[in-house]
Length: 185
Image 1 (cartoon, rainbow, N blue to C red):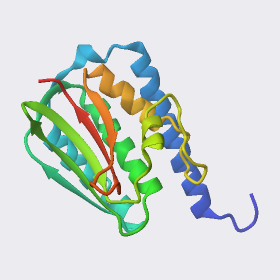
Image 2: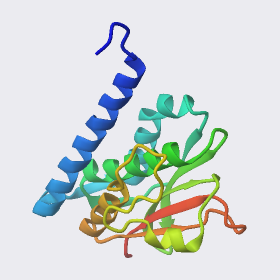
Image 3: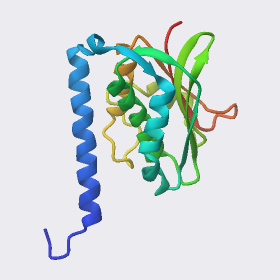
């Protein structure tokens, strides 16, 4: 409101509010439960590559390297919801990982079960905190700009698709986080 407004701060706040409005819209639509009517074959590999490319410039600024490592994985689903899930998981990488972090969006099948995974080599988190992820509006810290609904939405998207969402360390030494969306065979 002053003579010399901080346009970067205004832009950041507008972006945050736009993401919040989009999240609330997805949540409202999930509550209606009508998504299954529009399910069709979705290539998770194509979806992952598209979302990684779409967010490339966003990750260049904080110095986070995001790559796609995809193999074919076809599921019955709603592409808009699945894209929102990937966006939410990538938002968490951007919000909670330091510069120099590497993240991978991977797709494929394991034992005939399609999966989509977002994993990073960031600082990770202990098992107690990981167990709280995805619960209704869980916010684990106050330094990020999120409101804690992103992972709850991811859980609901997984449920709408008959899939499970799991949170595990990305490496054997407990570093990083791997979030895996997996469908039954």
